[in-house]
Image (cartoon, rainbow, N blue to C red; front, side):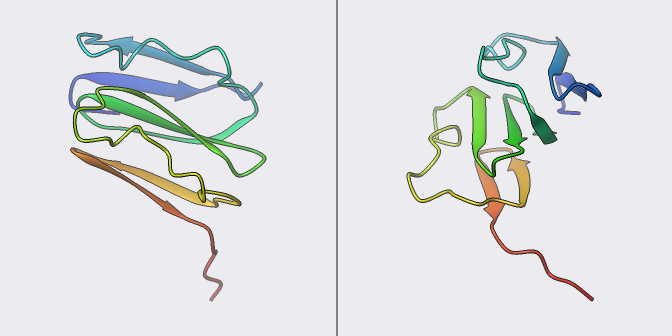
Length: 93
């Protein structure tokens, strides 16, 4: 959940959102399917697809929703207030 909105990941790999939508953080893009992980903060949302790509939506004032071209084979995501994080390696222990 974000500070102003919430996300839920459904069994079918789709996402639902509710709450404050002042920055379109609840307007889920059409290509949000096959999702395996989600993350949200006050003004933006992230979704990780099964193929290792990321989708971001909501406020993009600090480019936190601008996914870099080299963001491939991603395993973990996390949304921060004015940034987004992604990891493409899994640490096993």
